[in-house]
Image 1 (cartoon, rainbow, N blue to C red):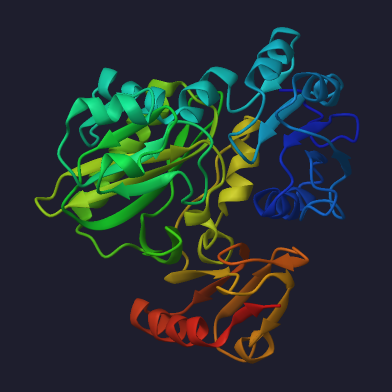
Image 2 (image 1 turned 180 degrees about the vertical axis):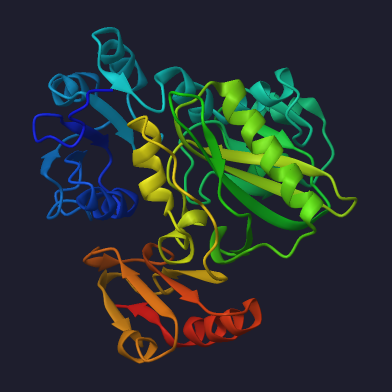
Length: 378
C-alpha cells in the first residue's frame, strides 16, 4: 500500500453512501483518510460529510469505471454494485477490497451457499431453484425458508414459505427450517499481511414483522467453547475466501450446540455498530485498517453493550420526527446515532442507539427503556 495512504493525493473510493459509509467517514477523519463516495441518492447520509460526493449509479458499468479511474483503492458499503466494472478497474491496477471475486460469491446467495458446501463450512441443507415453477414441480415439504438469490437486503427477499403459490418467481434457494436457540454474529477482519482479528460475539434479536435486527447485545450469552468455535469458523471462512477487509458472519446456534453459518456480509455490518462505544477499536476503524494493510486494532470489549435499531414506525411516511430523542439523552450510558435521512417510512433504518454499562443486566434494562421511548414518525 502507498505509504501516503492518508495523503490528499491518495483517493479512496466507496461505492454506496448510506449510514455505514457515514460511520466509516467519521472514523476516517481521525486518521486523516480521505473517502470519496458515490451513491444514486443526492440526499444520502454521506452526501454532506464525504471528502467528495458523486451522484451516480453504483450498478452502472460506465459510471463505476468513471468514478474509479483516479482512485488508489476502492471499497464498498453494500454488495449490490457493478462487479464487472470493479474487475476491470482491478486489472488496471486499482486495489479493490473486498476483492471483486469475493463480492461475486457473496452477492448471489446460491453461489454463497455452494461455497460453504464446497469448503466444509457448516450451513443448513439447501436446494437451488430457477423460478417458482421449478419449485412447484419439485414437490417439496413445507414450510421452508426461501431466499431470493440476488437483490435482497435488510430482510427483504427472505420469507417463510408455506405453499408453492407464494414462491418468489426468480432464482432462489430453499433451506430447511433450523431448530436454533440463538442467532449470533461474529465480525472478523483480515489485512493483506494475512493478520486476522475477531470482535467479541454478538447475540441478535429480530423484529419478526420486518425481519430486521431490532436489538443485539455483546458479549453473547454463550459458553466460551461456543465463542471459540464461532471465531474459528469465521477465521476459516475469511481465509478460504482469501478476502481482505471486514467480514460479518451470521450464525444459527442450534439447540444441540452446532453452529451453522446463515449468511455473510463483506463490509461493516449492523451487528457491529456497538463497537464504536464498546470496543477498543470499532468495526469501521478496523475496516480501514484491514483494507489499508495497517496493523489490526485491539477488539477487546471495554464494557458490555446493547444496540437498538431505530426503525421508522409502521403507518408513517414523510419527513422524519424523532419522538423521545431528547428524553433518552438523559439516560445513563446512551449513545444515539442518527443517520441523517430526512424522510421516514415503515421499518426504514433511521438510526441506532448503543447502550453501555457495567453489567449486561444493567444494559438490557436501559435498552428496554430506550426501545419504549424513541419513535420515528412523520
